[in-house]
Length: 553
Image (tube, rainbow, N blue to C red):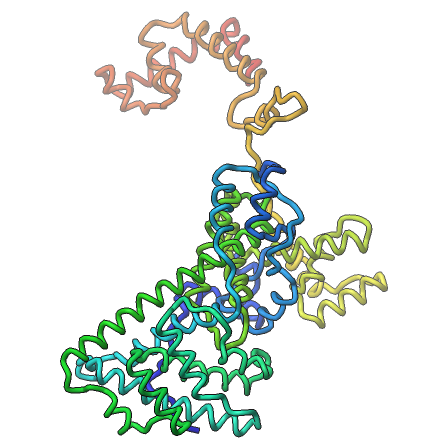
């Protein structure tokens, strides 16, 4: 098979995503567990009046959904599951909640944008992908010199010839009909004349005849065919007409020499014209991305509705979902055969789920812990149904697979026989149960001290919580009486004796002072202060003065 030119793989994964993926992979392969990351870690108003606005927008309000796991790119199984869910049926309305003016205005606006049919969707995606092909052809050489526009056209024609030859080889090897080159040229010419064209697409209808999207051979054929179509689309209309005339006459692409004669390589005005055409191509790609985004905004609302009551307002959920939609537009690969709405649903879910994990809680839980918490909650619900009561942490640990399959099997067998676990196995089970307890503590929701308690809302939760930093009423009264008794006992001493004791024992400001510090304060020696202190204490030890203070010892 012919070697593919100039196309270079895109570096799509960022460092944060790679780190999260590596962490998840490490856990799944036994290199770590949830306990390794533990330490480093709604409301809506019902509005029947919103039904009409939602119906105009064609939004599915099925109230279901759960947090998904956070990987960076959906595989084909993920996309097939989304297609089977029926999530993308955007005309079904089964409920409405949130009657809010900004929401109604937003729904009214997005409801005016028509949905895209598969052909329009494919053409828009092709126009965006064509810019990637153009950028690759315009790359500078090893000396940093960018090719002229005429040279870029010649590179694009090399791509066209290479992928057309590859298409012929794949079609022949698989025993399928050859695509009609003339029809493809006409379709590319029509799209070049009007980026917002309508009608049916021959390229899509040709691929729909086979097992496109589910068969690797058809996936390779689709990739080559779209490269041919996008290369044809990039040529100016005047050049497309010349290529179309040649194909109509001979039913094959012109050789490179014939193509070179079609290009007015010595005309300076033609070089500038090609530059303007390439600029127009990029502007059209931006318009295509905007159209693809606007046509799928109602899909974001449909998905966001399933994540309500999670601690984030409906409008914020839509905003986060729109960010995911933009990411889907950027990364969508139309050659795989899936509808854009199927692919976008996955990215919208990821964006909303991540926002809930990051923002919904007062105390943030790392995103990679959300799946573990959700799995524990599911296991707990299942065990409650099976056992008819709350499961123990040991039972949860066995179901969560914190132990190896052999250990789990051995522990269950011994429990069924009511045998005592050996110390090593019991220690492993306790360690797994501790992991469950840690996850449960992390999953707890904080409660506001200002939360009303009771039906009349006259009391707050904080009123019923003891403040262990403040003394109780009895202790406060005893402390006050002690101060009065000490003050009465000190009143029999001379002023100097009283001040010495107050400084030595911190009775004045709570700060005790040494003999040397007190001596400096009074301008006498340490020995003199010691004598004054001893004399004062002898006076206080008299039974008539010390008896009232003994009760506080």
